Image (cartoon, rainbow, N blue to C red; front, side, top):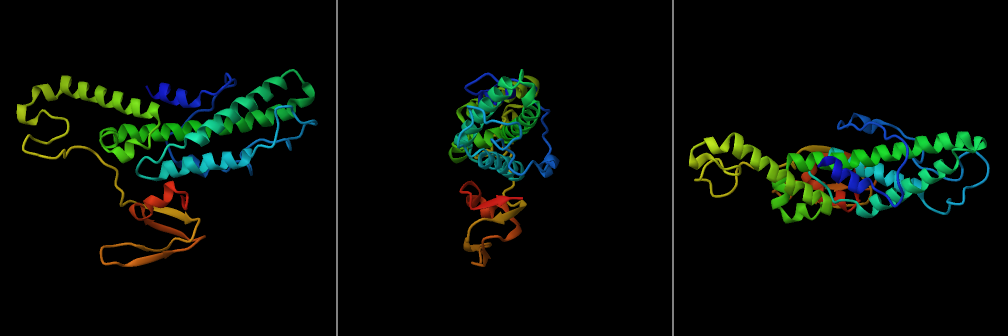
Length: 258
């Protein structure tokens, strides 16, 4: 199911070519420093500009994707799915792969083709890592996300379907292997016992985990406790702070994780 959801997001308007680099579920590779723009443009050596090249801010979208991946990897909860960005990246990948294919028989463009292939592979790596990180969070907190309207609205249609199928599969597994053999009052996946009124066995992410953030906009004074204590966040500041306090600023793009 993970491959189907990831594939649905990776599919572009043209058939992809070239091998995909391996993916990782670790955040260590977030220290990977790409080329300055992590993108492709007509400045790549090799002579004349390809007809598919035009005024398109490749570097900006590539950097936005990389930051979306970093944010997704370092926040404890699933963030809003970046549908517009993913669609633009898919189009970018398809267009650049077409250019690489056109240069395949042109020996004068061998260096250009090699550079473009390396860079589009790097962008594919970021996209796949971004999507897989989201799937790993959905697996970890599937029931919590699915039962929370705010969180489920942050998923793509494919991710929401994946979450539902995952919950059904886990429920069948536990019922067939464990729950059906337990006493009636203790054979529920969501409650410790039938005496529990609210579901008390649903794992949730810890929103009080500390994260490092860079402030991109003057946020003024924000409350940090129940005693009306405030803390000033100004543009350019970098802090280690509880995620819950800056949660709303992450999706709005006013802070970024580092």
